[in-house]
Amino acid sequence: MSKQAQTETRCGVVAVMGAPNAGKSTLVNRMVGSKVSIVSPKVQTTRTKVTGIAMEGRAQIILLDTPGVFAPKRRLDRAMVDAAWRSAGDADVVLVLVDARRGLDEETQAIAAGLAQRKIAAALALNKIDLVKPPALLALTAKLNELHKFTDTFMISAENGDGVADLKRELAGRLPQGPFLYPEDDLTDMPARLLAAEVTREHAFRQLREELPYSLTVETESWEEQKDGSAKVNQVVFVRKEGQRKIVIGEGGARIKAIGSASRAELQRILERKLHLFLHVKVSEKWDEERDYFKSWGLEYDAK
Ligand SMILES: Nc1nc2c(ncn2[C@@H]2O[C@H](COP(=O)(O)OP(=O)(O)OP(=O)(O)O)[C@@H](O)[C@H]2O)c(=O)[nH]1
Ligand SMILES: [Mg+2]
Image 1 (cartoon, rainbow, N blue to C red):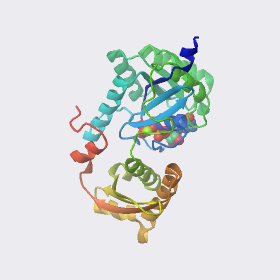
Image 2 (image 1 turned 180 degrees about the vertical axis):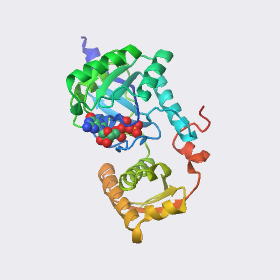
Image 3 (image 1 turned 90 degrees about the vertical axis):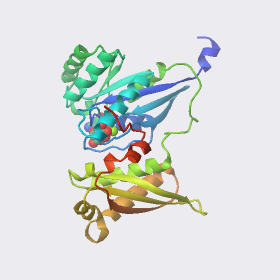
Image 4 (image 1 turned 120 degrees about the vertical axis):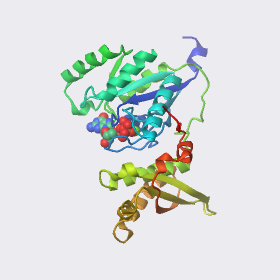
């Protein structure tokens, strides 16, 4: 290799696709080395594409964490599927993540078929290998490759990091040569106020009962820099019904207080600064039908 080639930088986009709950956000966070995308045990956690920025030697990997692709019914679902396919179409490398314990589900089949139809080359990563035995992994690899000829297959655990360093190195090597698009120490292109809204949504997800999280969204209404270097942040948790508002607030305000303090603690850690976080709960019957909501999250309102 010539001296020049050795110092050449690479930079490009890797779109991470996969069924809901496959572990896409967990993988993106691990490669970035920080929480940039929220994670939960429930499906359909990620609602828009999230960009994580990871460095690997002289390469900058721009990771697009996409919403899980699934059969869309509601407007928001259609917009999420649309966002995932747009990411795949724009990427330099597409990585399909499959929950190895769950195996070949309907969503993964739809992704493989969609890639084949669009003639998009993709690498495959079987995730959660900490939960399954090796023979099952080989059988699953064979089945998946019948649906779409993947360029290669990686076996990883996004949760404990097994195989992730190899995968990251491989992905970096496939990016085109070119200058970095972001400063080397950036971790995401998501503005702090959107990230803050996502982190609060994650803590609401964790602390609320099964159905409620899907009825809820969080918006950062104001972000005021203070003289002492801290910031005062007001957020609104939108729910659909009065009854849900009461549940989110909890007895004597206990639940919303717990969500707020967990979110604040995590945000202070991620952003490395002091925050004063104030949460308000409001009823908005159809927040997921409002144009402004889609616009603020970069989603297509009229996605087919
Ligand atoms: N055991 C195990 N669990 C994992 C692994 N990777 C992710 N998980 C868990 O799987 C669940 C879903 O992870 P997410 O990263 O939110 O999945 P996602 O693909 O982003 O999900 P959506 O955003 O809903 O599409 C979480 O509870 C994770 O902790 C893994 O390698 N092993
Ligand atoms: Mg996700």
